[in-house]
Image (cartoon, rainbow, N blue to C red; front, top):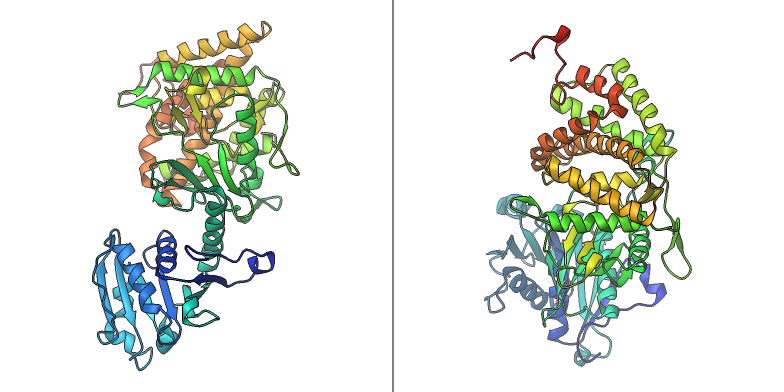
Length: 531
């Protein structure tokens, strides 16, 4: 090609561990640098190999300038200094040339490990110290393209260790933006959510148009925890991006505002999604009542519709929504004794206390499993709802997170919204919106059983609160995300509200006995509570 990058896309090349990129001119080299920059993280090592004049320094210079955010930065070759350091826009950069190095042992004298620990390192002539460089790296071998100097160069890119999977994803990303019209967009990282495998970036075109890049690789199979199955399988968590695509198409077919999918790579788990904006349904004072009311109406509309249990992913592939069964509901509530209890009291429950807990929940959930089932989006709460005032009616509520959707109780998502884990919903607003939901359901179905729904709401609210207490304690202890702990008092209050319902009286007694932080022991013989 005369301009840009031409990527080999033949099927026999796709599974080749090397990615061959033609670089016909300097512009193509700079485009490759911009593509790589978005993938590089602190601690990464990029090695640039090839003969004299192959273009190593040209590519390294483009990488340094891009990482530093300064297209005019002077980047001399470090042939004589061996190492040159720069302050990057976000991370330090180390540019090294090992051509004059006598061997890897000399790196110790340079303090190489300390210098590069939190930096992005670019190394020319890595073979001169290969025995001292870490194996996990991105290697770019540059050479003259067939046909002579006028044909430019080629880059043969390989990844070792964890970089192999990252390179496959990067290659898939570029193919995706090429065919979907987002090639010239820059990638802007977005704040991470609670997921340990899913992330998002905003794609911004030169004209200001935006989209979201969802990076959701296939979930790795975890260790078996029960009857040979991992936790994610038992809890019915989506293992591939197919679930998101299917539910997204299902919601949009109902006229609801899920994001349009502009492009997809199902195998790698990459989606380019419509950017629904960032206007929330909460403000500094908490829930915005009229926006929450419209979100409640969305659920009433969804739950009052006969919905299919199998949804198309592609013309040839369907996705069956899994049932939110007893096994899934129980393994979620067991996160409380597994993670929350040790966090609060510093030790595990006794075997008998845990068995009693599981038996009580098994009995309580039986009426839920015998009740009506519908699409349960599972994360229908303020962080995943976008307000779009430019649209009308229910379409003003944008819905962005539903990949773990199941067939479950309609009460679950109502409780998820009205007992928001990250925004305090006052009891009076909660009660008002429950009434709104009931009226909306009765308007479309005069047989809607309000009392049964109220029982299901209390049970599902308690189940969800119990689960989230365990999840947030796990996010702190296992995943190093302590900021989730600040939400625990709010969730404990929600749980106490739910346990006040008569349908949960036996479970309430268990929480009073073993978790007085949530429900203090009732006073004996009518005595006043202890101070």
